[in-house]
Amino acid sequence: MIEYIGPLALAGLAFLPKVQGKMSERKIIELYFKNTGFNLKRNKEVLWPEFWKKHMSPMFTRYDYNLPVGLEVEEGMADALSKALGYPVEVSGEKVMSIWIFKKRLPKQWNYKDLLPSEGWKIPIGLSYKGMIWHDFDEIPHMTVAGATRWGKTIFLKVLLTYLIEQHGDDVEFYIFDLKGGLAFNKFKSLKQVRGVAGDYKESSDLMDLITSDIKRDMSDFKLNDIENITDTDLPKRKFVIIDEAGELMKNKSMTDQEKKWVENCQRTMSYIARVSGGIGLRQIFCTQYPTGDVLDRQIKANSSAKISFRLENGTMSKVALDELGAEEIDTKGRAIYRTVDRHLVQVPYISREEMWSRLEEHVDVKAPAENGKGRENPIKFR
Ligand SMILES: Nc1ncnc2c1ncn2[C@@H]1O[C@H](COP(=O)(O)OP(=O)(O)OP(=O)(O)O)[C@@H](O)[C@H]1O
Image (cartoon, rainbow, N blue to C red; front, side, top):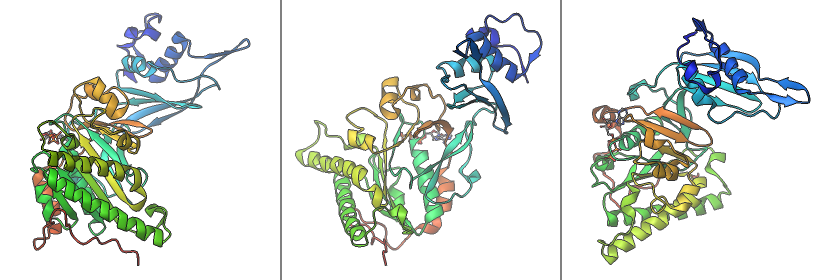
């Protein structure tokens, strides 16, 4: 039950006679149907959405309605109901329309230590109004991450690295491109799971060459063993290519000819990884603060079915990063829109540098830091 304050601002309820006191959520919803004519007329009959059930959870209340065939959720419904009910609302579904009323605001910050372990190659994306959202890299191998500087990309990458290492310490490998001066990820060179951290154009080109030769070798091993996709096997190894910041791997006028060749090699390889490597267990995470058509290559975008965006400068960038508006309106650090077929607004878990290194300490290999372009021995084992 909520206080009946907002409804008269709602177009659909503007025709209501004065409503005194309290009105149930269900009544408000059904008045909205009535006053906006949300029904289907067939012959002389008027068919209305039929209440089916109410579901309550600590995060939300959901009302499910059976829709008559032919009646569809209308644009603007969620906004209108949200104003009437005084909470964020989402409306979704076809035969059954669900009206989600989100009673709890998303937290502005929550901590990595509150995460639970997960199965398989899932990583935490963040807390949404509906609960925790996970990304499964075995279902969707490649991901793009966009966001203006200082809104949470690096923390997200640190959460991802820490979580994967904690969950899959013996089976995960990383190739890291840290092109923002090599400050954020240089120390990761000391981790057993890291095959290289590239901090400039030459190192990036060398590390891309290492990835290409790894892909070729793995592909021929997969062919020899008649394996189409690593997810059809019990091979435990997965490899992650993390590129931060992809915009730095664009040619520009101030570069020497040699530097242009190095970045061209990087661009070719990033596109190659996105096109061919999912089946052999390579996953690419492509990050940029400049989601424009130039930086976010067509092939990479087409092959990255998961997209995350933190706040962006404008709606045009949001459309490139997510294929929709919205990222320009995000107003909280660490808050992001995650899109696959579905869309979720999430608050990404926060991890401090101290917490991260206290968790990763046991994975440090003091004797053999990764050498760029050479890397550690590749431990995929087929036999
Ligand atoms: N998940 C989060 N929860 C709460 N606060 C966050 C979160 N992520 C980032 N922040 C806040 O925002 C600041 C900037 O975050 P971060 O370093 O990840 O930004 P960035 O987008 O990677 O910036 P840059 O591109 O400059 O590296 C952090 O120091 C922290 O204060």
